[in-house]
Image 1: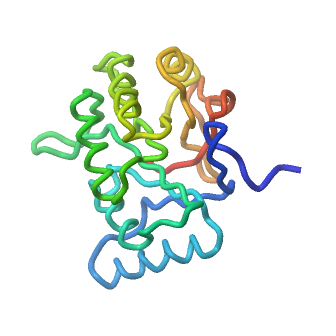
Image 2 (image 1 turned 120 degrees about the horizontal axis):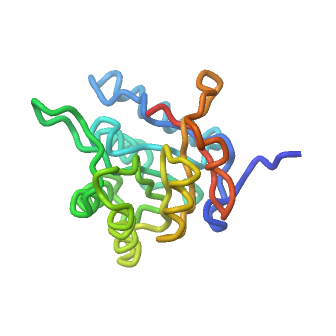
Image 3 (image 1 turned 30 degrees about the horizontal axis):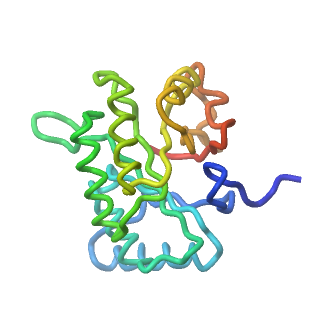
Length: 204
């Protein structure tokens, strides 16, 4: 029988059914309050893992979760992601793995979520224009400073995961996979297992 819980990085225990906060509306006020109520109800029903990202409303989603849930229950893990730059007309939103950019988004996440440490921080996408060691090295430095607890990856292949593990310990992998989206890019089928990692589903 499959356990109803699992451990992230062999340390943090969470229930297998988490909550993806991406679609929570942050406005207008009536919709925002409905989102606050949904987040609170999810925790009341036993959710112990909530997924958010800087990309979701460019920080507004993180602020919403803090409004709804801070101070956080001891058993609640809020995972967030960094590594996507907002639109800057005429340029669209884009993956950005520059070390200074990742550091800035982590600092913003700390402020928005009202915490001193992000217990699980995931790189939203690997930036092909920046050496992987530089991207992960920046997160490792933040981890050494106590601002990140555990580091994960999002939307990676098995080869990318193996390369990342040569640089840092990877606590989680979050790849797109759901009842409505069963098609995995080549080489991604088993990326979420092994080495204490876990696998979530996501929509973006």
